[in-house]
Length: 108
Image (tube, rainbow, N blue to C red; front, top):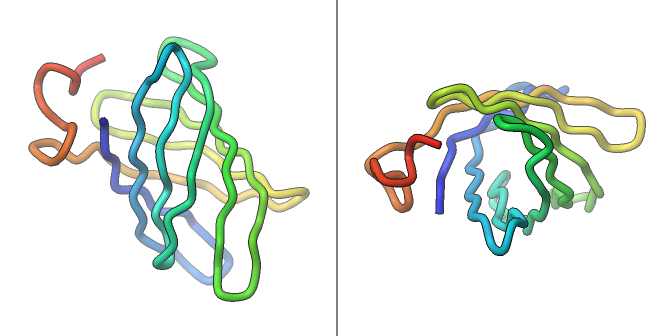
């Protein structure tokens, strides 16, 4: 499992979170942990370094269905989250030396 520290640039300012992903039979599965909630994600690779994830973001006042598109570049990750007409930018970096972040699966 690969782990990324991610930050969405929300209307209320940046919020730190965590994205954990693993590939299972060609599909991507994992979680986005944000604002104290673990949100399951599922998705697929859309290119050599790009992926698309479907997920919800739970907050104290809402549960938002979302689609996030990410580009991976070395140890960095960036992209956008879309919920209806609302769009937020994501950015972050891979956590190396942590659970799932070893040299064997840390490259590509």
